[in-house]
Amino acid sequence: MEKLKILQISKKFKSINRIASWVKELGNWHEQIRLIREALGMTQKQLADRINSTQKIVSRLENNETNPTIKTLTKVANNLNCCLLISFIPKTEINSTIQKLAARKAQQLVNQSAANAAMELQKPNNQIILQSKDELKNDLINTRRSSLWEK
Image (cartoon, rainbow, N blue to C red; front, side, top):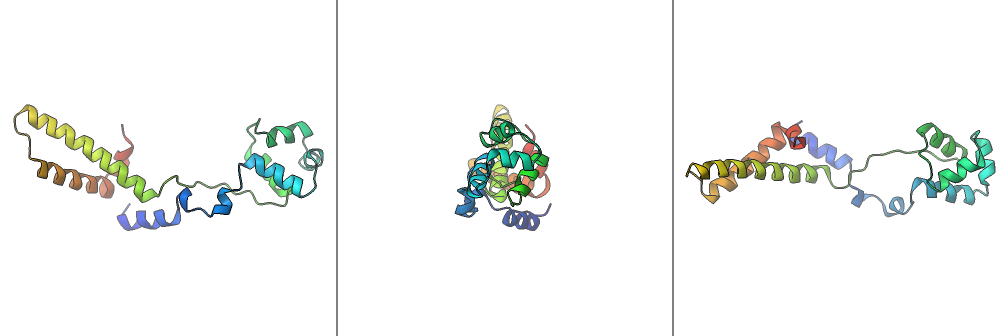
């Protein structure tokens, strides 16, 4: 994927730090169910009846004591007059993640190469090592990005 494409995708997927504060303050999905249900004046039993379930299941949902299916959450959302939105939100900017991984991988590879060269008494000077690291980092980002995920 070319560098421009990465930047475009990185701009589209803002990191969690750039999400609107009101979204961050919504709380977890199970808290949202309870808050919205209570704001609507609906009991757990009434919500349970609307989603063809039991009051105990709704209680377990609101207390995060179950792992509901997307189908169940969709039913709950629809009956609370809400939209269910499931999103992947990067913890940090995508481009920043790529840069950090590439720098780490390049450092590892250059260190290995420098150690091998030192064993042969041919260790390059620090300027060459830094230049090699930068070149390798750019190569990893631009042409071998999937290698960033290999151990």
